[in-house]
Each structure stands twice: as C-alpha cells, then as structure tokens.
Length: 435
Image 1: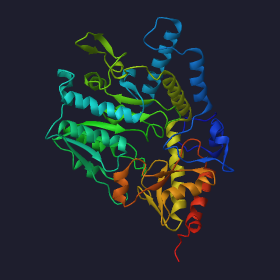
Image 2: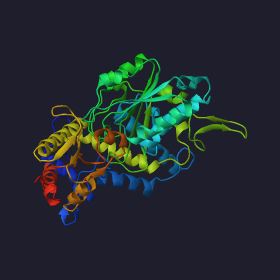
Image 3: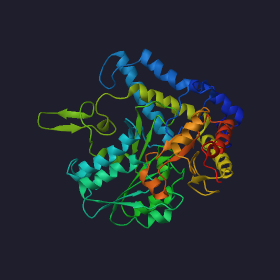
Image 4: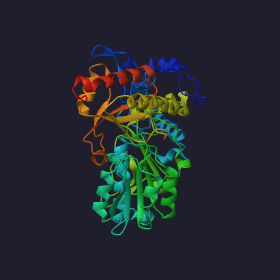
C-alpha cells in the first residue's frame, strides 16, 4: 500500500484500488459478479498485513502473557502490551493503562454498566462511591442507540432502581444537542450515546452533551463503534469518561474490543468478571484486585487478536484517519445523490448538507429490506438488511427494517455506482412501481 497520509483530501480512485488489492477476500466473484462489499458497518474485511501479523505471532511468539518466565512468555507479553500502547496512541489516551481489552464493544459497555451496578451494591469500597446510583437517579440514552448501548443500561436501572430516560429522535431518526441537554439535570448520573449512529450515520454533538453532563456531575459513555474505524478519535479532546469500540469493525479480528476510560475512573470501578490474572492476593475468604487495566482482564487474554488489532491500527494510520473520513463522506454523498433520484426510496438520517458517516440506510417502498438485500446479493453487492440492532429507532420511524450500505477504505466509486444502478431496478423487479 502506497498512500499519502499527510493530506485531508479524499482518497483517489487509484489509491483505493491499491488499498483494495491488500484485501484477498475482495478479489473474488460472488454469484458471478465481482464482489462489491458494502457491509463494513457490520464487519470490515481484513488486509493481508493484519492476517500476516496474527499468523506471525502465532507461529513464532505465542504463549500465555503475564504468567511465565520463559522466552516465549516474555515475547508474547511484550507484543500484548505493545498492542495496547498502539491503540492508546491511536485514540489519544493519556496512557496505555487506560486501554482495557474486552471481547467486543458490547462486552466493554457491559463492563461499565455492571461495574456501576457492583459499586451501587457496595462493592469497591470508598473509591467506588462516586459510581453509586439508586432510586431518584437517572440514566440517559437516546432512542437511536444500538441495543448494545441500551440493554445494559436497562439492566442497570432494573438492578439499582434508577430511572432510564432517553432523548427522542425526530422524524428523520436524528436528535440534537438541544434535545439532549434539555434532559440532563442534577439527577442524571450517566449519559450513554453513540458517537455515530449505525443506522442514520448521524454524528453526535459530543461537546455539548459532555459539557451538560459535566456541569451536572454525570459520567459520559461513548459508543465509538462507528467512529473509531472511520474518523479521527481523540478521547481526551472529546472530554468523555469512557469509550467502547470493536476490532472487527476496523480491519481487525473478531473476539477483541476496547474499553477506554479515564485512569482514575478505571482504578475505582469494581470489576464484574473475576478470576485469574486480575488479582493480587487471594485467600479462601477474600480477594484483592489489581489496578486497571488488569483488573478487568480476567482469564486467558486475547493476545493474537490484540496483535492483529494493533496492525490494523497501523494500517489505518498509514492511510490517515482524516483521509479515511473524507473518502467515506464523499462516497456517502454519492450514494445520497444517487438514491434521491430513485423513485420510491426513502433515506433515513441527516438531511442534505449535514455531515454524516459513510453509511446510508434506506427503505424501498413496497419491497421488504430482506428482498432488497437478496436482489443486490444476486449481483454480487453485499449490504445489510434488518433493524441493525436498533429496534426502538426503527419503530419510531415506522419501519420494520431498512437496508444499509456502508463504505470503508476499500470501497470504490464503481462499487457505489453498481449499488445505485441495482437499487434503481428493484421496485420494477418486484412489481412495486406505481401504476
């Protein structure tokens, strides 16, 4: 890959073609057509560099980390912690110890929610008192959240007696800073929201929400699953308290996610998963836990996955995250313009001219989203169909499901144009055109 990162300009088509050659899976035909993979919002593909990095580690250095005194154990531990430092730098963390390895973003968000639940039950001692919530306290989310950033907070409310509230979305599925700030007050203890919606592509007004939360002493938890892979992310600059994202959405492997948290908060938050590797002293009556991040990494760690995720980060850094964002926003606008010209297609999300990520969800009048997906798949075009783990949002929009096309660094203009041409054929194919 030869791409210039020192610019904010979108990737050229020649650069994207060069990048695309790094992804073996994209070289195949599907159903007799070249694959146009437009489902990166669900799972991104992996370049050869990432596949090779994990394979090299497994073939040469694989061993248990933080446990052995032999050479392979030392090499494995170094690789594991180097990966943590790489990810910490990528997101602007103050120190590598602010990065906790988890199974995925869902696991990371549950870690925070159940850690707060444990603190509310008296676990964690004096240091954990800051997390205590109960009857009369409020947890705030939005109506647009992925289930992974909704269900854990529902459970926290049920366990503690706190009240779950939500920012309502408007007819296009978006919400504003004013909508959120109006609901943040002295009773608010946690504000959890997505940086970028996985359905509408809306980019959240983070600074305004954080300012209101801080003014009322509330914690902020950011679902960064659709931002960390696609745009520059600086957790300190954003002013948030916790952030979560997954490796498989950013050119990395399954089975690994990241929880970032402010050091003083992670060290005070009680763990909810316990066992080996996260303790200092264990007796038959009592255990004492290590400081973060080890206190949250019980059991056998995802070592090769961490190594592969670090290589994915380096791959993205070589491209430049400003260029990644510019490329995807360019493609999103191309999709929006094309879909606007197709009769019977309704796009959900921000109106024209409002920044959005490189994904577009839409409804084809008279045709179910699954049929849309199957028609496109028959032409080698992969998109997502369903409620995208956001049932409340779809219910508010009056839709059972939508189709979603999502782009990434390997998506070409030709991929988008093939998609648009195929969407233009769907209603006629299913006999859904107006008489």
